[in-house]
Image (cartoon, rainbow, N blue to C red; front, side, top):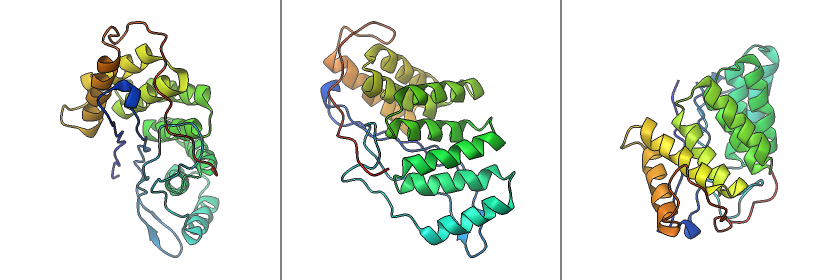
Length: 224
């Protein structure tokens, strides 16, 4: 299995300028489709805003031949969680988060202890404006693996932009710093997010209280 990193881009020195994107964890081995070998998906960046497709993103157009080939494999192998996750990744890359969520759910029914797929599902929920469902799914990911830094990283974004919970966001990002290797993309992104939070709200330490909301993230993209 080849892990694909969740990466969050943080822009600006102030939390008011904080924006980013979430990518799925997507640790799925390639599945041999009837017509071709399908490589592991690598999702394109999407803005940290609830909704579907984002303007100006790097979404890939869906490869219908690949999707149909993988669906044939899935139909022939009802107990294959990996092919369903790979289908989900294909739709995630195309920013069709509704279809991605459907296949992540199908994969988790077969392999319910896959924290990466669970986190990808939570991200898909968030991009379809299901913030509470996303948070619940992140909680399930952390029940599977309490040290899953990719989950903590995205949880912070959803708490900040989905719930305007800056204290909760800071606490989640602090967990990333504590758990992830210092030079990892997750740890670097979490430190940038915390620096931006502290710059805009110096009174707010992780675990503290604040009722202020962050600046609005980029507008949701339509069509997923």
